[in-house]
Length: 80
Image 1: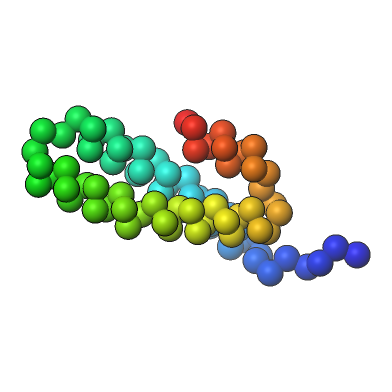
Image 2 (image 1 turned 120 degrees about the vertical axis):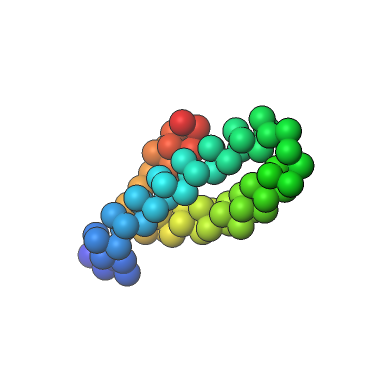
């Protein structure tokens, strides 16, 4: 008998939506960091990216540990 999931389907859905939003924000930040000519703006965006990236990694691990999401789906999502 499979072990019961520790996270409900509602929580998993919220995690997945948060993962999608945060990865989109990371891609946008990466673009603007690359294109920015203002060192202060670049520094600010880099700091935000540095704080956000570990959260995305943590959410990704939670989703993988639940076994509800394949690594392929996560890789595809991160490449988009």
